[in-house]
Length: 256
Image (tube, rainbow, N blue to C red):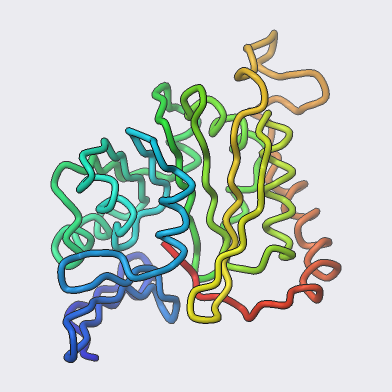
């Protein structure tokens, strides 16, 4: 295995390695493996294949968190429309130059939460694959994220949220709660890839998207403009000590 490309982007050390044996490439952000493809750019990680299976039949995909773009490549090569979001333009260059991501993939450099706040489009499927190292940023745990994802998915569509941890981990609990409040029916799908555990939270709509009300909020919820992050993040930290010891799977690699 040799390093074929390395860049420090905003404090993130990104490395692309290549196997001398078969030409397979891997994308690392620090020590965390995010993407692995073969010499033709075909995905080699089990969780990516599992995400794709949950989105069978979707003709359009919004991908939040791109890395090497393995999922975007799979969708685009099948003739489906893909919009990829990442907060670092360097990521798109790496995905295209080193991981065969097609030019047809629409790439938007933006913070995922900011993008969701202003978005007015809809997709058949939304894949959430956002990490800092192996942790999901606290901003993704805001209640407004669930509501924004509900608006972004087309009727009959699905949101698939990847968690780099076991099904009993605290992020899974919080994500399920956020998505249920937003009107989804979340289902937990454990994924083992070479004894490394990821969990997919698969969310399908239960009710119609919420209609705007006076002040932009629904009864029982804070206004989307309110800062939900500290409250939810505090809940998550409290849950960590209770839920994390129940995990029976090894700490997984982070995944994009």
